[in-house]
Amino acid sequence: MKGTKFSYLLAVAAAALLLFSFPFAGAASAADAAVITLPAPDKSGGVPLMKALSERKSNRSFSEQVLSQQELSNLLWAAFGVNRQDGRRTVPTAKNSQQAAIYAATGTGVWRYDGAAHTLTKVLSRDTVKVFGGAPLTLVYAAPEGLYGAMHLGSIYQNVGLYCASAGLANVVKATGVDVLKNELKLPEGYKILIIQSVGKPK
Ligand SMILES: Cc1cc2nc3c(=O)[nH]c(=O)nc-3n(C[C@H](O)[C@H](O)[C@H](O)COP(=O)(O)O)c2cc1C
Image 1 (tube, rainbow, N blue to C red):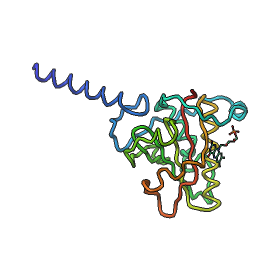
Image 2: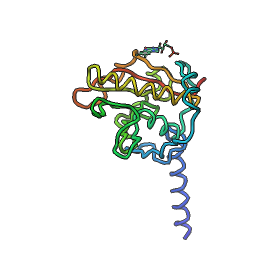
Image 3: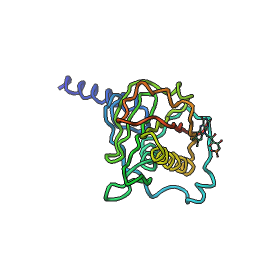
Image 4: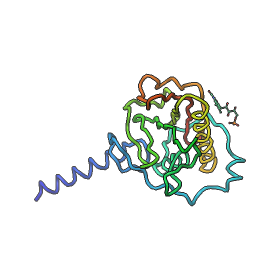
């Protein structure tokens, strides 16, 4: 009986350790989880669109504080989530090709966002906070080379910029730093990293 109780306490302690060592606050998954199912995005909140547009700006100073899992969910859904029953997204894409890839680079690794499943899958274990200038989250955007791909990513980073304005988060779009993960990320065939966007709480 004593042994059972001890094992139970050990399991609880281990679960608590994993929970609090995770990079996104409030995440229930283990630190080494290969796939995180994000909570449903909160589509009811936010400031009115015209206010978000008024407040959209670049901010290059980030606190070390990580985003909550809900903020991350909202942000990625705004970026390129599914917003209709038929699987179409929050941004338009040429012939609904949906050609855009988003990687979330964080303190515990780089995660690929799957908008259809609203999940993150770990693709690299490397801590990327320092290499991206101290931002707790840097979105690395890839698309097929060419005009349409660049347009898709521009729509995505603007959605993220507006979400940040609405949620009081800092963000900056950057061309410098696009090569940081170039040789490590296995991109879809024909894709190229075109732009990045750092996000965090303002300092
Ligand atoms: C395609 C693109 C590339 C950018 N590259 C960088 C960059 O490498 N470094 C940086 O600090 N800001 C970069 N920015 C941010 C711009 O400097 C910023 O948007 C501009 O100064 C206007 O400021 P605002 O965003 O506050 O309106 C980039 C923005 C865009 C759209």
